[in-house]
Image (cartoon, rainbow, N blue to C red):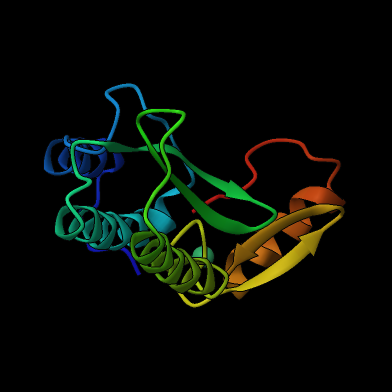
Length: 149
Ligand SMILES: [Zn+2]
């Protein structure tokens, strides 16, 4: 569950400040609130790995998004022609796999335990309550608010 008084914009502003070294100013957080704490943890680990390998000034996060129901955070060298050394690549892969796995067990809306479901062709990881709301919205002809709390 998200902490009481959770405010999306405040949380994202905090992440932008804390991880200014690796987050481009205009990067979008293209996920719902339930995954923002996972992104915070993941960015801590990504930044730490880059730092330890001496890549902090030479790498950046390119995208943060949901795809096919799981969380994707893409990290790349700033120079297109550069590539990460093997050991760093391996560490980033471990972090990526860890958070892909956590994301498919975490409701993207509220952060409660969830599972990956298929909702009339659209994949999303949701808790039972939000999965019910999504099914009801599809059944009702996709009118009005998808999630009502
Ligand atoms: Zn939920």
